[in-house]
Image 1 (spheres, rainbow, N blue to C red):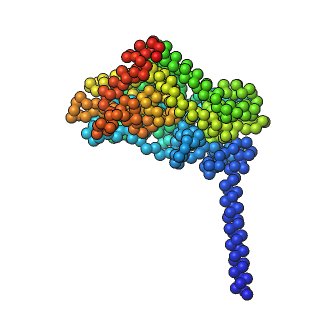
Image 2 (image 1 turned 60 degrees about the vertical axis):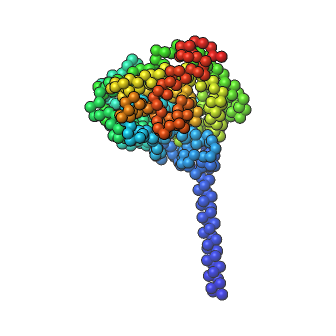
Image 3 (image 1 turned 45 degrees about the horizontal axis):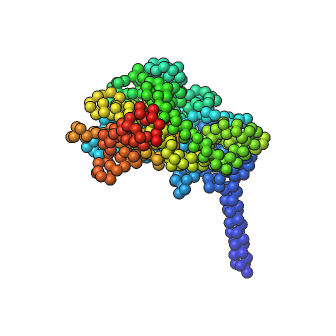
Amino acid sequence: MLLRNRFLLLLALAALLAFLSLSLQFFSRWLPVSMQLKTGTHIHPEFAVHLIAGAQGREDDLNAKNRKRIMPNPLTEPPAIDPLYEASLYCNTPGITERSMEGHAPHNMKLLSVQVLIRHGDRYPLYAIPKTKRPDIDCVLEPSRKPSHPRLTDFISHMSRGAEGQMDGILNGLPRFPSHSFCEMGELTQTGVVQHLRNGQLLRDIYIKKHKLLSKDWTAKQLYLESTGKSRTLQSGLALLYSFLPEFDWRKINFKHQWSTIFCSGHCDCPMRNHFLEEEQRRQYSFRVKNINLEKTYISMAKVVGVPTRQLRASNPIDSLLCHFCHNVSFPCTKNGCIDIEHFKVIKSHQIEDEKERHEKQLYVKYAKLATHPLLNQTVNRMYRIAQGKKEDIFTLYSAHDVTLSPVLSSMGLTEARFPRFAARLVFELWHNPEKKKEHYVRILYNGEDVTFQTSFCRDHERRSNQPLCPLDKFAKFVQKELFLALNSTSYYDACHQRSV
């Protein structure tokens, strides 16, 4: 009898422990969601496991305990397109180990030059959602705050002496690094600086340490640097250069100012380019008004903030919401409620769907071909000069925007490439076989992935050749001739001034 009582007691105790364990699991699983109710933000259950209290940087401390993380951790790519996963890739938060294929070529090949086109790093929004508090982001660089970089302290010190650098035009009056305790509209954040310090370090390990592209006594003539007249592009370029160059020397830094976001320089007069852009904008509008779910979402958000729907839509809310998302800051709330993750997912999903239709309709591709020809032609001409023995512009850096990279990707037929994330990089490598002096090759890489044989001009070459590189002549033929075939023209001038059939 005593043995039986002990058995029943142990059984009851085991049942009690199992109940407590399940209860703890239940409450720990739903705790983040209950925290959402305080701010009105709904987090999709699929990503609830990735939520943590607090936001990035200074918001990690106890003073920020009323905020929560809303960004998923992109460990593996989902089987179907997911708006939150795509948004997290767009944020490009430093810390995720990235695989890079830059600098990979057969052992008998020699690297002659590298041309890099980047999008600026993470920035504060360009637009504000009406009647809501702007995201509280600190743009003062502090190495002790995450995300950080081993060279951030030295970067700040060197940029403080930036008056020694040679900057063209309005670039000379721009700050060399972000410094506002409350970010200004469009200002580069510490995350943006770190993204490009990481880019520069990655390229340095490959091109400087491995391929010896530049020596310690490099000269100003070996660099060609160009930036648009925005502080975020200039600062992004400087961050990449600082961690890339063998020795950073202000006396050799000479950034040229590019007034056009498509870098068309002296070849910007192109009426048909503007025509195709207007057609593309009409397509975007038509596609948007057909999306009933999107319109309902805008109506719902407009009620939250207390403005007409058209005013909310005009404020481009996705730009501000992406900042909240990327910096793990709660979405805006008012007395009428909160903008939540479901609103964000609908708008982001529409962006993804719009990208897909954009490729199908081909209007944007026509615009892209005309928009990018001047830049691509400059790239080809520089490669030919170096192939002929010139030692100038061995490393070229264009610091630009998403509206710069996106048409370049489209014009080259890279339809599978994602929309340019923060700190995206597009690299053009020029290679040479020393045993065959007339043979020069091109490799094209996007965010570290070799996309050479995904381009329209080198897809067929991969099937017919054992050479894992694309002949320079094929790239040149595409830029100078084939680019205009879809426009029923034979030259850039004719394509720009003759209406396409």
